[in-house]
Length: 285
Image (tube, rainbow, N blue to C red; front, top):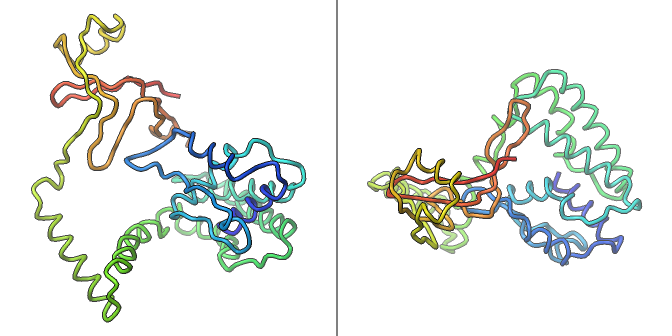
């Protein structure tokens, strides 16, 4: 999958209709975020696109690049016809494979998508060698029938656990007994976390807070707030965050999935708080 993303980006940039600066500017302007981190792809560089370069970022950032790539391109010229088809096939494969629930009728369709993707990829990049991971796609429909959703057996949770250990190994620079150093550091860190009294009692922090009166707000908003706040004065802030979530005004966030597996988003307009009560005014779409 990563090989396909890299080659599609190379093909798009080779047409001179797009520039790295234009793609990076559009990427930076996207306001969709989740939790405390944006999970947006890292800015693309010339070295990552040319030759055998590697797209920077974590697995989640590269996955995000695959999903938002159409929003980063102003125009897709006809010159990259096969590359476009390969990308669209790969998107369909990811949407089915990463879904929590899929109908049984989608399994044969997944086989067709995988076959089309491999064929289009070969026609678009005849000089690129296919990797074993691309061959493993052929077995995904059978695995779906055997064990259900493949997200239950993916390795993202293990990659997340492995990431800080790799960072620690590079930071300590002690290569005599790396396994023992990592195990000892991990055990001490776990003991510290479980012994902390505030581990499961995260502190909520607001920013740019100011006092507002109900007389300064629209009547419809005051009527809605009166169901939760009886005082005539309370706080309005720009953002509210704790150890896991950071919600800012004028940002869009994922809310939940509908019964048809369609995502719902909400746009945070205003935030109000009083003591331990936090209220958000948002627009769902």
